[in-house]
Image (cartoon, rainbow, N blue to C red; front, side):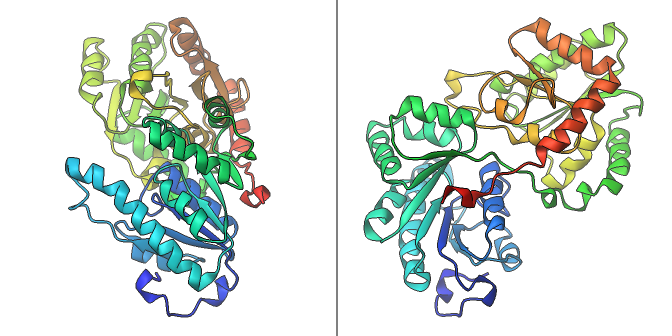
Length: 400
């Protein structure tokens, strides 16, 4: 990795003409949906990009393996923890990204900045005045919501968007939300996240999936003939995992040998376990806890149906910008049951790679589970189409 202290070193030949500085606090190897999105963008034009990101555990080894230069600003879990850390961290991110972006300009003379998300955008706004560059800003959903909470930030955010060469949204829903919130003439593009098989390591190799399927099922004592429903996400209220658990006893009643695996951690875990115990399906509902990306392939392989019934929750002050897990499930050939709302509509097409339902309708949800549990041909049909849809991607250079 080329650290910022090594600005005098020579540019590697394989990145001889970089003209785009990509700045993102969230970047691999730290696992995050936005970081994965930005990394996939960089892989499309490795000879054109320079990356500036926050430091994280394992970054030195990761950065050395990349086809493009990666620079990091320091991050310490000690001075960025607790209440003061939550206030200090965004300020430090703004300062570091601003100062180092200017230093990198005098080395590379890049012409464009691509800002990876809406967080810490004041740095980008300042850079647009200090440097002779044009810039694009990427928006994912919750970063817009955060900017709206403070009247001053809202005004500065709108000014930043107006000055942008273009805005890139991760879904049609994010674009529509942006348009209803701000009236802008800035060109806006929709580029959905893409699946990078390497994210799952060697586990994504089709020859390994059968073994992984057997291994995961054996871990939870699930028969090979049973139907396995899978969910992946933070265990929070608006993800609606309780709705899936509610359907387990109903499916058992009609003769479906069904199990449910939840991958993730969160504040609702005790409540969900209590619900499973109350419904007497605790032997059928399995809490896997945190599962890394490389282990996740085994869980996708082990399931027959992927289900996430997220609902809109104004109290949570968040929005479902896209939902990459739906696309991941499709990539592994699994049919999806998903809510008919938000950015999910870009990832799941009704009766194509899954079934869209009203997550608040118990009847619709049960009918979707019943159909997919009872109809293997339908599962295979939706899964096959899902694989095709998951391989589609839009090139980021199209915004230029």
